[in-house]
Amino acid sequence: MRHFALIFDSAHCMDMSTLAGLSAIALYLITLVFLYQDLHSRDRAKRADRRVLGTGLAAGLLHLLSAWSLIVSDGQYYFGIPEVSTLIFAAIALLLQLSSLRRPLHNLMVGLFPLSIAAIVLSLILGTRAQPMVLDTGIASHILMSILAYSFFTMAVLQAGLVALLNYQLRHHHVASVIHRFPPLQDMESFLFDLLWAGQILLTLGIITGFVFVDDMGARGIPHKTFFSILAWIVFGILLMGRHWLGWRGRMATRGTVIGFLLLILGFYGSKFVIEYILS
Image: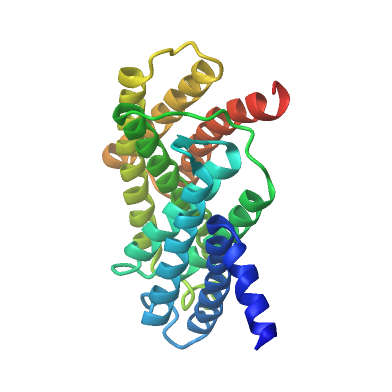
């Protein structure tokens, strides 16, 4: 009994972000076990079953709690690289679970959840170097739109990787190893562009709210972030119009997705890395 009391006391003393983060990691690992079992079952392209959905949603919610506990402290907000990264992956995990109600997304989850675990670990190990912020409604809406946009585009680039893999295997006649593990290629490409449309709409709103609500657009790091965000917006816009008018797919779709995503990441993480780890 004394041993269990010591364990309880140590857990009680553990801060919320750490406790929620470690619990989320455990549930992500359990979900990966369920996903592995499902992917090796006969019906490999089926939608996520109740076990995957239950543990995955619980993991995503605990992950979100861990991220929010790191970001919010004493009425101030810390949006450093580790905090924003783990928040983005928490949002992705939840969005992916909800999307799995309509589509078979086992393969995307297998790629995402290890990254979510890594994001939690890094967020708990690395201390924040961001300056505290006090948010008003306008800035909060800008940050929310931006984080959701990054989340959808991250899902899109992972999906693009799966589409590229499937295309490669089909071109090299590895059909037997593909057909039972992936949904039809047309469905995968359709979902890729659904993700890109959602991300583009949110990125548009994020850019607009940034121009409207950010008081000093010349502040350190903001011009760099704005420039690359607009470049990414242009690339994604061209890709989506090419899909609509010219039927772009395959390599054009995957390459355009990767290029736009890299521009977006360079704009956000590039400026924040320089500010937080080089100039600080």
